[in-house]
Length: 227
Ligand SMILES: *Cc1c(COP(=O)(O)O)cnc(C)c1O
Image 1 (spheres, rainbow, N blue to C red):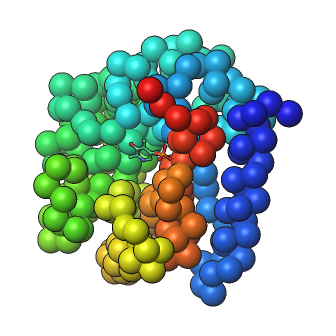
Image 2: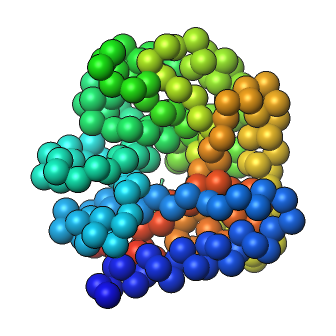
C-alpha cells in the first residue's frame, strides 16, 4: 500500500470511530482530500486508493491539475479565497465551491455555469469569530446570502463551510464548532435541502465531527507537509 493510501485508510477508520462516538448525526462524514501545493501524481495515488473528492485553493494551480487529470472522475472542490475575475474558470472547472462569501461572486458563478453542466454545488463560508484576516460572512450576512443564492438557478446551495481559529484546548475547539453547527441547524429549518456542513482540518477534525460536521477537509494528514 502506498504512503498516501495508508494515510487515507487510517483516517477513514479514525473518522468512522469518531462518528460512532457522537450521540446524534450517526451518518458518516465525507472526506475531502486537500491537495493544494501537492503534485498531480499524489492525487493519482489517492485516486488509485479509491478517493474521489479533492480540494484546491488556487485557481491557476487547480486548473493545471484538473487538465492533467482529466482522465479521472474527480469531484473538485474550490476551498480558497475567490477573486471575482476568476469566477468563470471556477464555474467551468469545479463541482463544488465551498468559499462563497458574497453575492457578487455567487452571481458570477451562476452566470458562468453553463446549461450542459449540473448546477454548481455551493457552500457559504462563514466567519463567526470576528477574524478580519479570514474570508467569510457573519450570521446576518449569511442568512441574507443564503436567501439570495437560492434564487440563482445554476447554483445549488448545499450548506456552510468554516475554518474557525485554532484553540489550545479541545473543549474550546468543540465549542466553536458547535456554535457553527447551531447556525447550520437554523438554516436547515428554513432550507431543508441543506445537507453539508464542511468543518474540520487535519488538526481538529475529531472535535468538528463530534460537533456535527458532515465533511472534513484534510491536507497534511493525507499528503504530508506543504512547502
Ligand atoms: C489548506 C486547507 C485545509 C487543509 O488543511 P490541513 O491542515 O493541511 O489539513 C482545509 N481547509 C482549507 C480552507 C484550507 O485552505
